[in-house]
Length: 276
Image (tube, rainbow, N blue to C red; front, top):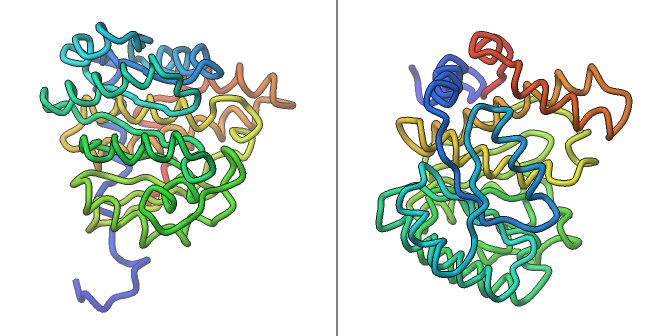
């Protein structure tokens, strides 16, 4: 194909069919995902993983976190409530996952807006996360070209974070996913945008944080972290649309979302995912 062709005519490097294959492998293998996450979202994150077909383990205690990371299929490090002991466990787990060749996921919650976690996130970046997943303001701040958002909320648009995401991916040698109305995912070279999803995810505690855990699950079973990250975002978008149609508010959406994660089939994902 002519490299000068309009970008919308160029097929994405990850197809809906490949995303569906990843979902089928999650269901067949139930990857064990270690979650070092914040106290606000631990229950919802575990339920999202269970509904998708993975197995959660909330192991973040220093002295245990590193050993568990060596046997886990995937690891999530989420900086939502990074108290001192958890930070120690996170470093253990990140280092052990890197040494074991496990693509671990860093979710830099509120980085840029708060100093302690910003410095800590930059330390973790040196341990080479396989995936960084955050909103636009968090990704820009972590890349060193933004001041962060309003607490955990982004004040920058997804496309504004494109260059920062590419630079950060090249720096880590991994994948960066910027979540928003349209998710942008890059490995420093290729870029895929995942369309669709429901805004109701922003009105449920843990909507973004649980996505990081799901990314870890999909990366555990996929051929490469880029494909796994795209697949997880596509699955999340399709399931959230199903839940939105079946709910009347945030409470019923949360329940319907877990049901949709459990009920979405690989064939449905292949037919409904919009990747560009």
